[in-house]
Image (cartoon, rainbow, N blue to C red; front, side, top):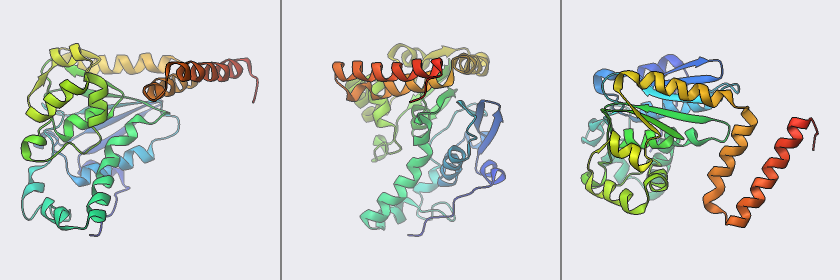
Length: 268
C-alpha cells in the first residue's frame, strides 16, 4: 500500500478541516468542518501532524478548538464503506495488507494525536458537544481539557468491533484509572461534563458560551510562567509514573539545579 502524500500547504490543511493561527506564543488549532461535525479523515490527520511539525519555535501553548456544535463526531463513516474515501485506504484495504503495511498506516494516523504531549509545549483542548471516538482521543492527546457543559465524550470503537488505536488509551487510564477506563471503552457510553470534571478527565467545565474565554484564560495563565520552568515541571510530572519515589526526588534535585543555575546566569 502506498501512503498518500502529506500536505504541507496551510490552505490544503484548511480544506481538510484544520486551520492554524499563531498569536505570538499561542497557537490556535481549529477543526473547521462544522457542517460535518468535524468528522475525521486520514487527510485531516495528516494536516494535524503537519501543523505540529510546522509550529514556530516561539510557540509555548497550543489551544485546540472546534467550530460548530460538536468538537468532533469521530471517524468519517465513509472509511467503513467498501469504496472508502477516494484516495485513502479503506478499512477493507487496510485489513487486506500485510501486518507491516497495516502497522505503518496506523502509525502514520497516530502522528496526529501524539505531538500534543511534546516537552516544549503545553496543549489545551477546548471541547464542546460530541467528542466521539477519534474526537475523544484527540482531546485526550492534549495536556489539559476545558469542556463546555454540553460536552458528551464516548469511546465507540469497541462497540464497532474495533479498539481505540489513536494513542488515547494510556492518557485515559492515567486520568480516570483502569477500571473506569475499561468501562467507558467497553460500553461505549456517554460521559458528560459533570463526570468529566469529577473524575479528572476535564480540568474545568464551564457554560458553553464561556468555553473559548475560559480556555484562553488558562492559556494566558500558562504563558505567564517562565518557559523553561514550565518545560522542566512538565518533564518532571510526565516522567513521575515511571520513577520510584527516590528516583523522582533525584530528578527534582537535578531539575532544580538547572533552574537555579539558569536564573543565576551560571552555565554548565
